[in-house]
Length: 256
Image 1: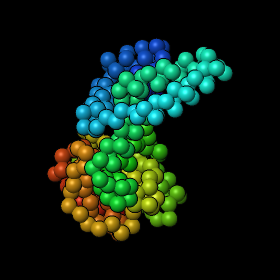
Image 2: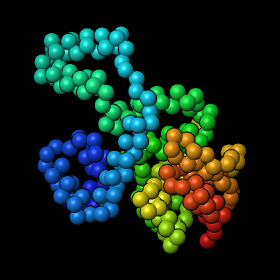
Image 3: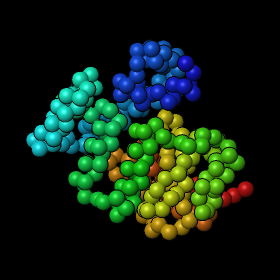
Image 4: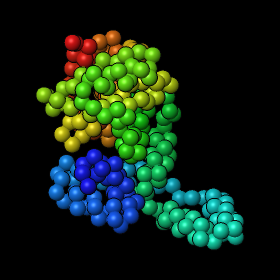
């Protein structure tokens, strides 16, 4: 197994979703590859943060009854399939939040507790989008450090052309880009790597109100304007590093 194969399986391995053959292959790879091993540790740390920070919501009796009734109906038609469904139900009611799907549900419920609605709080929405992409292993749709590859890909799918630059010589390596929806608008997302951290930078023509750096659920959010664009960065790097980077990005991204 090489790094390109391993990177698509790290999250599934952390969640215990691989078969024995692929699990053995990725374990062998992680023992010799420091970069993939660090990525695996990062996934485990993120999962642990959600386990410790988010509240747990036990299923109501009404929900239990409906699910159990559905299980019984399926069991009558297909006994083997019903057994798998029942096993999944027992796993869920046991309180495990290790799977990505369960973690995303917990994120949505926990977000409701801190009192924001999607679209009302730009920083919280940006953090939720960053977390969702991380948990779904969907950080990039066009993977390249070449701005002449990333920029045309994004421009062809948006009604504007976002500036794109790589700052690898300063430790911020362009990993690629993807499309997201922020504040009810489709936006370009530039993805950078800084040491073992991922940084999402949401870019759109100027329309967001300037705001000081914020911390939402353990993630820092920094805003800057420049080069005709608004730049909203999200990461778990320190506030000083994130703010300095997004300010520089806004100033220099439009330069030749």
